Image 1 (spheres, rainbow, N blue to C red):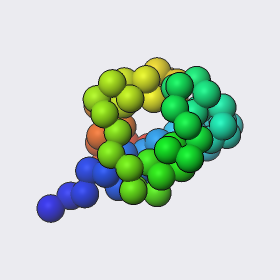
Image 2 (spheres, one colour):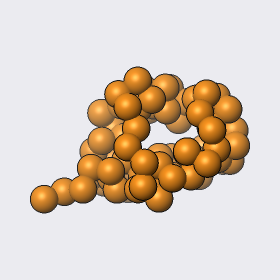
Image 3 (cartoon, helix red, strand yellow):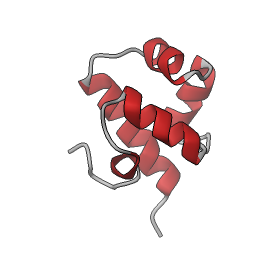
Length: 73
């Protein structure tokens, strides 16, 4: 069974880095604490649907892409 939490974690981190953004920048733009974003990128936190939508906007992608394994390859 796929671990969706780690798929989201990998996609968020990969897209953030590809966009040249820091965790601080993304956290500010998505209106979340940087420590929460860090936990999300490590697969510890479970983002809400609303947060996935915000992150997708900040990372210039779609919520579906954040949930898709290998979307950032």
